[in-house]
Image 1: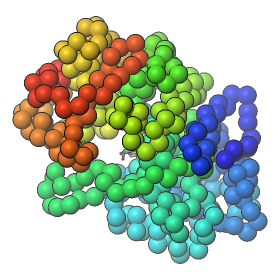
Image 2 (image 1 turned 60 degrees about the vertical axis):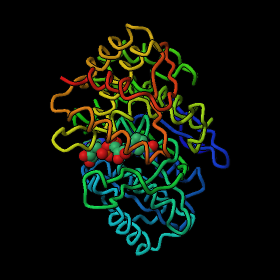
Image 3 (image 1 turned 90 degrees about the vertical axis):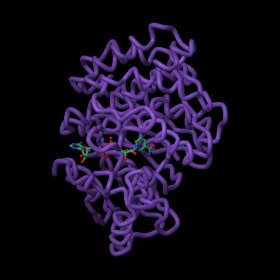
Image 4 (image 1 turned 180 degrees about the horizontal axis):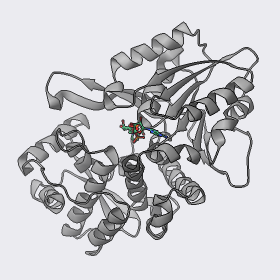
Length: 388
Ligand SMILES: NC(=O)c1ccc[n+]([C@@H]2O[C@H](COP(=O)([O-])OP(=O)(O)OC[C@H]3O[C@@H](n4cnc5c(N)ncnc54)[C@H](O)[C@@H]3O)[C@@H](O)[C@H]2O)c1
């Protein structure tokens, strides 16, 4: 579906070519105040119809109001509900509460659900949109850097699920659906209110993309990101638009080739670079890591493994460390549990992923590859690299 929609010279567009429902990611500053026009151009603003906005409770009132007013100006009746964005909100009970609100507002089958927030709101509202009345159109309006460059694009939605009382029984993203958005509107002005740590966390996913982007049309993404880090961290709007544009283009190219993560040769699984290590520590109590911080440590560990296995130039770990440090992201950590516990946590992930641990290793010059079932000794080199 083409959004048509308003277009200013500074806006950028990426088309995500998935079978059945291609869609656009529009990147610019101030786009939320044009949301109604975009709905109109998608045929989602029929007279008397309804739109539902699920928004992050920590957003400034002005951000939510900009979206709401724009949709109302397009003639739609608007209902809304806030979501407190923590991992506990990616739950059955929060999903149920949102579905109840949708039904109470008499939201119909072809009416848009707008997800306004970071990855948590996007994953929860996206999943609600996938199952409510067997699927309603979702418009992803990401408000974190991480969700602009990653979570809002590609159609993965879902919630966490506890299968028991233990800490290892809490399984991230266990239940969900592929539900591609009808449109993604990345309004870079919304990140002005994002806490610094959250903003830097998003840069980790950009660095991840830079380590695999050469096979997806952008061989110099890591070099560009490194050389523009000061303006990125300063949240310069033009630099952010280019950063997000380039990262979304890479993600779109990956998703186009492997929408449902089925490719044995890599495909979408490559986007898990840094995540096998990262997931093992992200939810460990006491470490207090954001997703992007865990990914940053995971990138460091994976790159060090790769160098030790002679898969990449020996200098790559130092390069990765330098760019992560420039972004203010961690590369080492105190308080990591012993290796056997970390390996057990990775093995737990392995069971979830179907019996085989896939480690993604950077090869240098913007390429990465999947390695199946590396030995414990090989993985331990990675943990040793990030243990302070
Ligand atoms: N679906 C996917 O493909 C995908 C990909 C990557 C990550 N994810 C998921 O995304 C989630 C993480 O998302 P995230 O990093 O975007 O963070 P988030 O949604 O957890 O938000 C981070 C924090 O920032 C606040 N916030 C969000 N936008 C704000 C703004 N503009 N101003 C002020 N505060 C704001 C939130 O309230 C929250 O406290 C995880 O649950 C992860 O599993 C999904």
